[in-house]
Amino acid sequence: EAQVTQNPRYLITVTGKKLTVTCSQNMNHEYMSWYRQDPGLGLRQIYYSMNVEVTDKGDVPEGYKVSRKEKRNFPLILESPSPNQTSLYFCASGREEAGGRYNEQFFGPGTRLTVL
Amino acid sequence: AQSVTQPDIHITVSEGASLELRCNYSYGATPYLFWYVQSPGQGLQLLLKYFSGDTLVQGIKGFEAEFKRSQSSFNLRKPSVHWSDAAEYFCAVNAGKSTFGDGTTLTVKP
Image (tube, rainbow over all chains, first blue to last red; front, side, top):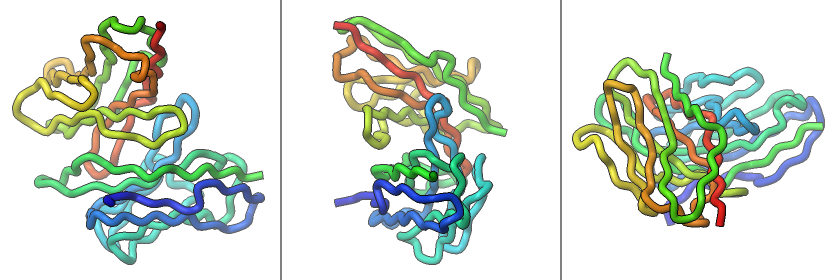
């Protein structure tokens, strides 16, 4: 089954304790992206990757790191989480089309993170 | 810089009534435009997309959207709303950097 998986689905942690949220897709998509969703703010892009070893900042990258060493995986790293990073996080992947544009995104189930 | 605006935060319609959700975008060229739906506690699902060609596109669940370049709009429509359509709807543009609108929450009255 074609899917994007995220782990963990729920995480409660404390300020400053490094954490990683994993994301994996099995559709051989070039494009992967991380978003955070907060009430009234829609989805805001954190980082995206157009291919292996290529990553770029979205609208809200501060406090986050990513890496794309393999095509299927795109982990999100919070080196020193703070309470304002409490949010619902979505990973997504998509296929590249001509002209540097990208087709629909397939979303993971989300990771609900609480930072105390 | 690209942007997406959904002017309506919340819309309430009666079951069986027609629906239109508005979306305005700003982008340097002809964008790839998308509408996604998110049911409570769920991830996002694609409703429909516009790349080029026919400006009226059909999607799943009876939804359609019309691309109007002159108005920089991509409004979502449905002729007759069902109670199961209650959800949050997002318009988006993706050119690598991906931008979503803030969403419109649809409530359906019986």
